[in-house]
Image (cartoon, rainbow, N blue to C red; front, top):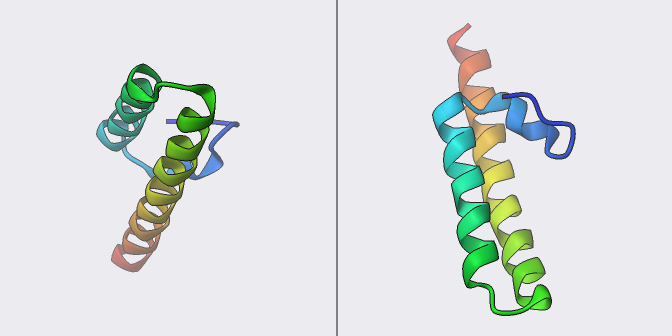
Length: 63
């Protein structure tokens, strides 16, 4: 999936990208406040960006 907002999403397969986006929707629904959402968003993006980087490295190693 191509994303200009989250460029590291380009390294995810479609299923992983949809899981990330589903998580964003859940955060928005349960955050309780804009500040709570932003804090949760920061953690969610940090976790997924590490996942995307690991996916990219694994794919490069596989050739």
